[in-house]
Picture (cartoon, one colour):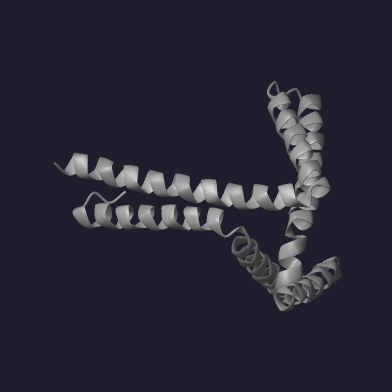
Length: 176
């Protein structure tokens, strides 16, 4: 953390921008979903390019799968970027199924930790079960999913804005 008046000012400006962005996300959830669809497409495209680059430098026998995954990701990424509106509409399902599989893997990991004697495995199990329930709600009620996604992004932006402003206030107090 830089302790200067300039950093305090920039943190305040950043905080205000985050808060305004959070309010905008709440006011225009459709725009948020389209923006997230674009980010998803770009992320998958970049992942595919990175996998193909990893294929070139890899001499192991299993490298064919890396190339296959890279090509598939590039195709999927381009498809998503060329079809923004359908992607935005499908985003709750995409995120819902991703959350479903991620949550199930957490449940499996929790039982694996239990077998190894870890005492706090229940925390991971609870997180996996909660995630599973939320994932099912997102998939079964896609409107809920869209609202959940935009609400989550909005709350995060509002929180990040408040934290930036709080940090700026703390810096000002330290500098006095």
